[in-house]
Image 1 (cartoon, helix red, strand yellow):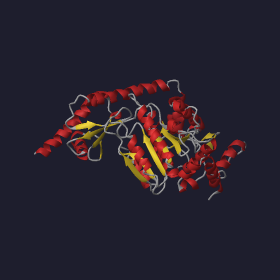
Image 2 (image 1 turned 180 degrees about the vertical axis):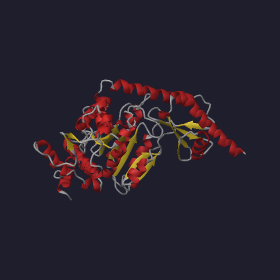
Image 3 (image 1 turned 90 degrees about the vertical axis):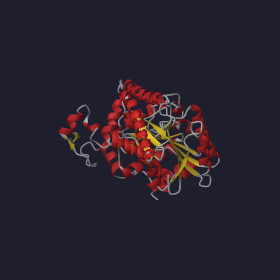
Image 4 (image 1 turned 30 degrees about the horizontal axis):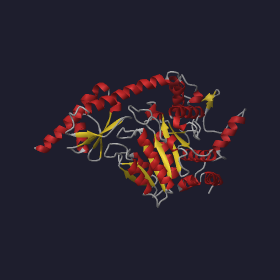
Length: 435
């Protein structure tokens, strides 16, 4: 094993022995090179005042070399803020700004030992880092039965982990914390579990209320007290889009410092929060550990980034930082929030009229981008194809009964027509079946 990896492992083992036990084999082997191209280039950047012939970029007239046809469209930005490589951990100013934003929006993080967010190539990259560091063959990854399908690829296919499913809702249409607890305690023999908490949920658009949140935290604490090491990952992709009386902050804060056997990892980003999907700017933040453990985990995370993508795109990091620093940022974001909230409220008002009760129920939703219908009379995939072919309407079929509808991309004025069309599609299929 590389001495740098060994040193990081020794630090984690001394400071947080249960966190060390959570590491995958890759997680134990990985490190960020202290001696190599990046470190030598950093040293040269500080000291090579005459000629710096270290890193693989091109300079011209003291600026990063660039094409006019590109710079003309980016003239508001200094070339050094868009063309140079970003550091593997991300643009320092952006990391600091995002950290401040997280603390402001999540009061439960205040006073917790919070690591410095590391910039990722959006949230999927952050989740894949968690998978690389903590998941290996046979490890249990707990997710609800209503989930984002990419978890299977990220944790299961890539890392060989076992996906363990539990029902998202109780019969009372609340988050099923008891089922989560049972699924956790079932991992007693393994001694380890990775829990992914995605709120607002994709595909249902559900965020638990405060009491449900406390029950989730209690379930994880029960597992830890039973001797199970828990990597608690909050996938906060749709953070901030809370339209009703639910939790309005991440559970990462409540999970931080909960128990020595619990590691809180927050995954979030500008992708959905700031409506910049193509920018691919996300963050991974470790919470509630000692300074030494946080530093070691961040070094390992940088090693994963260096080994996979080297560093994320610099221009989009600059763009996001510029937005966060703008005095107009909060007002503009609130304006978009109100639009999204209006769409969600219109969907719920329409579905609550009772007109469609014979053909579908809907799963509880109060946040995010999506909602999910539970079809009563027709197959979801059959309906999806029918809607696409006959009406030019796109939806997502999930299993036999569930149809996901993204109200995020439908103007409020068109909500009624959309659901009326889906309803007509159901009636079409019922008529065919009756013949």
